[in-house]
Image (cartoon, rainbow, N blue to C red; front, side):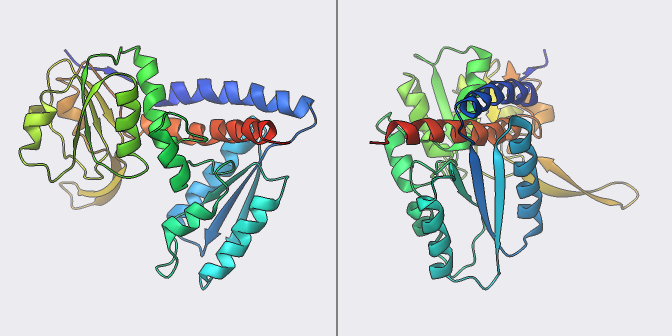
Length: 294
């Protein structure tokens, strides 16, 4: 029997509606929410993402500002802009579009963002607080996975979850959230020997390795719940020799969907929910900034 599809777009629509209501409540109190993004140079993919950020913010009533810095921007220059935004009371949230130039330390710059304005949840201080179960603002993608799991109504307590991919702002925080839900969690990566032996034992399989097609039907326990976090752009060539580029996940959807009980598609699964978590985090940032005022 084919797996049921976990529709991330539907979940994202619901969250946007909730965020819009909350933003309107802030507006009724005379407070506008504002998300400011920084970008260095004009990377095409990043510019596409920035335009998406602007549309998403407009849809829920959040003001959006994109600050474009020259490609030769130095670490000191970027730091000054971050510091100014940290001090600006009109700015609710700050996000730093990646990649940064090779001469700028990305982690150091993320650490510079005020944890209460870090709407992506990438400041190492925020990531560290996830381990204590008390994040100021948690990473968006990890929160998206949690939200999708809520949608499936799966009971985490006692299940065996396997997380493939241990990135600092995706795989590892997801594993921590699952542990906090009383799941038994196995942490793997693409280099884990006999990876399939681990994944085949999973009641819940979360894949965030950044390798297209890493997980096939032979790697999945029948009836498992599969969350595919991967977003990969791959080239394919048809019989006529025409080349196209498509977006795929880390899971071979066609084969795994015939084995799993439920699965997220790519695109249309984790991605849309991740974007709406950015909006929700902006509202959360506004709340916590008000709460910490003397």
